[in-house]
Length: 285
Image (cartoon, rainbow, N blue to C red; front, side):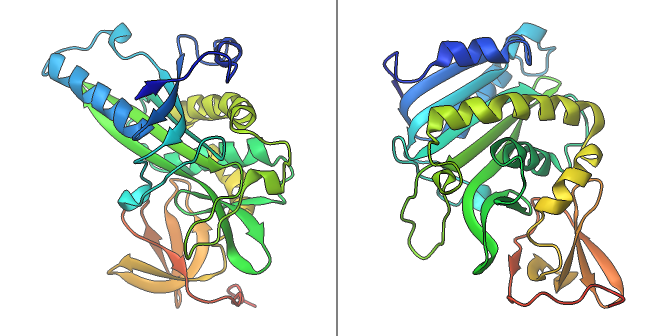
């Protein structure tokens, strides 16, 4: 991990702007790293060894935002690689305690915060359950992937700490056999520092709300962003191999219709892909 020379990003200004939202948050910026998520989870695991079986002081786990200009061994959900070239992508991870026992729908809440911060109109960005941010495209039912979210948990003593990683394609990057989108397509002046400054206040506020109320309050904002809704989908769930996506429940579970029955697919347990391009009629039509 190499430290970035001062002056490239205005991290001090960002830190100052975020203190009223999340007091005590530290902001770290590095030039290159293997993975921001791995770095933060490793720190927490080392801390867990120190406090094994004991009570963890409140000041032992301080909230951290770790940002990297270049990520060489990043990974997304199911271990898929996520690499970032300098100045072409924003890669960052948040480490903070979420005291709420049920984290169901957390990745969706993060996605809503990112999408709304970057596209207030809701016309350009959408979300693919459970963790993809996509640029809407008439030729691609699920759009073109422009970002993603990876959430991990580490137990430190009796506390469960969240590591929330997110990556955004800021400028176009060539990815073999995979249509991708970039923020500059809807925000020509976008840069990684500008994108970070735009999303962070909204993201921290969303996490505070989630900690207090869970995913349910985010459902009205998620619904119009839902790119899977109404599409035929294939899943890896043995009880529901295929069906029609019918939105999500108040806990973030994907609703998949098979005949007259609605199955609930829980985030993190399945892979979902649309397998047709024509939108089927909704029930009753």
